[in-house]
Amino acid sequence: MALAFTKSLAAFCTWLEQTPVSQTIQATSWVVPAVQSVHILAIAVVASSALMIDLRLVRLVGTDQTIDDVLGRFLPFLWWALLALLATGTIMIIGEPARSLLNPAFQLKMMLLASALIVTWLLQFLQRRFAAGGDLASEYQRTAVMVAVASMLLWASIIFAGRWIAYYS
Amino acid sequence: MEIGHALAWLQSTAIAKTIAENEILFPWIESIHVLAVVLVIGTISVVDLRLLCIASVRRPVSQVLHDVLPLTWGAFALAALSGALLFSSNATTYAGNFFFRGKLVLLCLAGLNMARFHLLGSRDVAQWESSSRTPAAAKLAGAVSLAIWISVVVFGRWTGFTLH
Image (cartoon, rainbow over all chains, first blue to last red):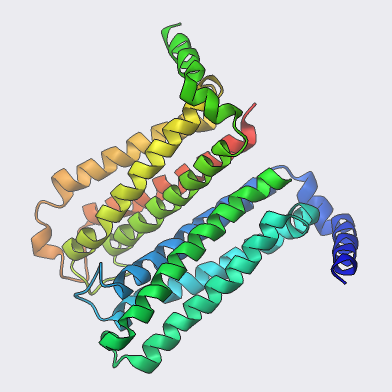
């Protein structure tokens, strides 16, 4: 079953590679580096926004603000930047289908990304359910610390996996 | 030429050769470099957006600086260290690359912009830091900082693409 899936994926990549859009991207030398640069800048927004939120959750930074304030400041940037990552990522997949979709580092990155998105959503859920706008009740502080650490490790791992795509090509 | 000899020597050191020849070491150091760089630009943009009155507008500037700058400096130290190690492994080639040299120039400009702000622009910060409007000099420092760091990322990416 896994083999059948891989074969279908490879066939899809071959088809995608032949499309006019993909051919144009492949033929225009500056598109990939330009799109990658935007991708990296969007990563900077996501990683830093997540960092500021996580540091507030573990009460290391910005304790003069409520968690709601910090979420309100950084979550919009985080979600919009994720949208930019989706857009630039899609362009890169279309331009180089096999290099991304069939690449183990890319596949790992996507699984880590799914986990990071779940953790980010979990953060928002925790805040809505268990806080009265201020800090989490003390019995949830340990959970908050675990979620924050998981978040930081996941985003860092995603960045590493992204860099390693080039080394598995 | 003196610099050429220095670069060739640097490349021939044990640590430089280990990084260049080890298949795993270079990608790991490079990944750390990318993580550090994105955190530098990501965190400094929090400060810049405050100076431009675009985000965190209700927080005093000094509070934003207090929260963010230690993170920026920590990330920068990591970026500089990992960058130095990567550079040493292929010093001559990097030194000859237009985009790499451009990146170093941009880093100097970023430093100058920051120094100018801290020495001149922020002297009277207590007077305006809690208002929703910042002086033109502060706005300029924020805008220049953002422009420079975005360019650093672009030049860094282009270095990889044009390395021979």
